[in-house]
Image 1 (spheres, rainbow, N blue to C red):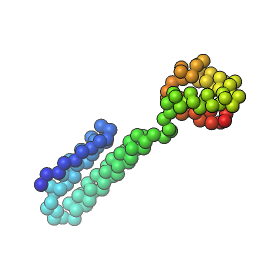
Image 2 (tube, rainbow, N blue to C red):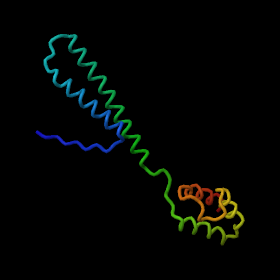
Image 3 (cartoon, rainbow, N blue to C red):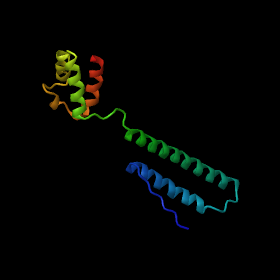
Image 4 (cartoon, one colour):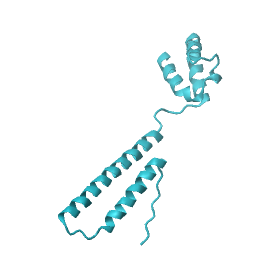
Length: 126
């Protein structure tokens, strides 16, 4: 039998998974359990590695959550259109003040990673 596993996770999560897999393989080799003490030891090992598996799952969930976009991504054209619409509504001074609140004098100087914040503030003006 051949089992193939593909793991797409941060390096520390992969290391944790591989450590856990190695430990579980060691446990699996301990097939002959004859005393109550051995049963307890195996149970402790399984419990320990179950905790590691839970930590691995939590880390994988954190990574998935971090990869999900939390805010919509806007393009310069979308931001420009929104601000142009506000200006047509007679809110030229507010638009100018909004752009300047980002420490720049022109919309093209606003960093792209600030577009979502700028759009949110523009919605407040509307």
